Image 1: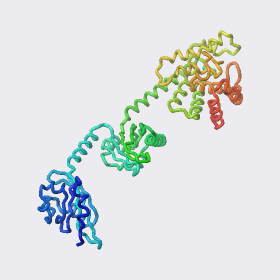
Image 2: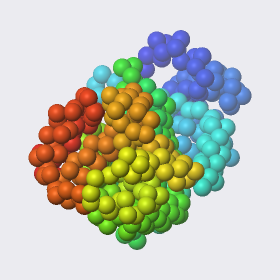
Image 3: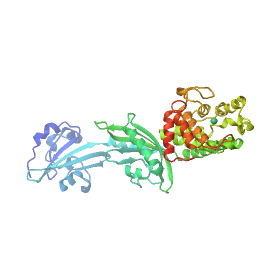
Image 4: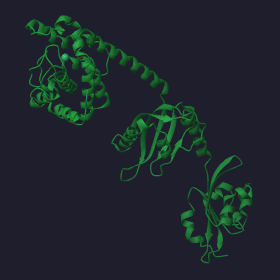
Length: 434
Ligand SMILES: [Fe+2]
């Protein structure tokens, strides 16, 4: 057996909080620090030379004892064990001499009963909430989940090993790209958090709507995220209601849209076609999903005020008197009046009021200028002109798409917003057809 150089380690180890023992290969105590002696409440003279298990009243079976395992395997061994109701964290390090032989073992142990109790309480708290809770190690890609996160997908706890890669593979294909983009932006952004909604594949093969919120709680020195924690909230029921509600709303919007066209059959399908082109322009500009939806709805209803214009004027084929022209032009304000009290997320009524306004103030009904006109109204204005000119009207044949494009091109910056004109031309160049 080689010599143990106990004296060199003594100064460092004597006063650490953990109990430290140096044992020979028969597991007799060669050295014990203050904490270890306090633990057995004996003097150093009493402890030295005695067998570890005599002094430490260790009742662990041989197979479970990390000290014995470290000796047998010649490798360090770490284990949490319970002895007489006390939970210990024991780490055992074999000491190998210069000849490569086992000289003994260093044992470092710590009473973690209080900490383990706190961990159990925390775990119980985590499991008691209705949200799933997760902890993501960004470096390893490992994710720990509470049982609820599995249950909301129909799995029993730990039935699935849901690493980050596994989670990604369970995302609905339509949600994957935006979800991963928002998540990445969320953990790298200054706010260091995200809130995203997506569908995950459940055990029964169906999709479950989940709202996930996450926050970075630890970063590396270069600022990159290391640990992110968050929740999974099951929003399936609410989402189903939302979808049903949206379907009813869309049906109602379409019904309102059709009601104008029943009165004015010459503009058949005009609003739906303007809505299609407006949406394409809004997407091309890169507006948010909400803005795109607003443009789409406002375009579907932009001429709803024509319900208040006498039908014979709408279908009149000859020249219009100034009174008749005034009545037709009043449709922008009437549309506003019809919709101003309807609750939309965005000012649909305002956009409809402005759809005949022009950048230079030559439009109607208010004659407002560029900066006072909503971008959404500018988009509908361009799509409206392009659709109207390329379609047949009671008082003229279709002027054609080329003439319509020339109109917006030549008046870009004067009547029409240049950005909107450019994107409209681009969308049509790329093959858009009504
Ligand atoms: Fe109009």
